[in-house]
Image (cartoon, rainbow, N blue to C red; front, side):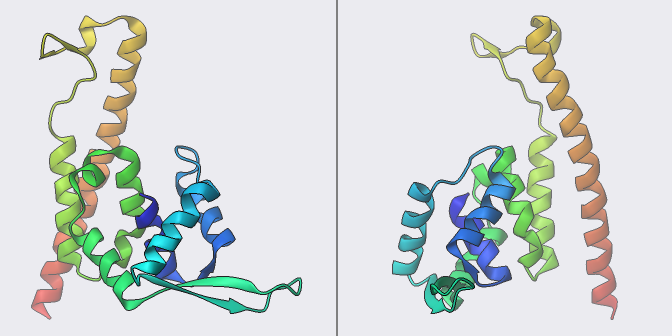
Length: 181
């Protein structure tokens, strides 16, 4: 998720590492706060791989600022990850939220539609949180507190399913309209 966040935010505009960390924390901080100990090694790996560059610009307080910019290779990696996300990026709620934050950067609506259809297919599968000898346990078989997990998840899945159906319908219509022109 961190790499996707870095690539995504830098695709939108060059940023100082502090600004980048603030944006990442804004998106994922409530779940996984970003520490300097995670961010800077990730930035260094991406720089070494040629995915981003760093250059100095004058700072507001006189000290120069190190600004990060996405390279063409970095943009290509981002678009590849968006077009063909890993299974975890589809099935994990937090990873999928990160993917959604940058899906607008994917220029091909067919690719966007394919990603959303994968998620819709995933959330339409029955799910359980608890198992008994390999058998999925239903909400009516657990105590009231564990039942709360099922209730919360079901509500979120219903809302997401509705949103995904609306967006995939809209994208399908937009693609069809574009083909007619």
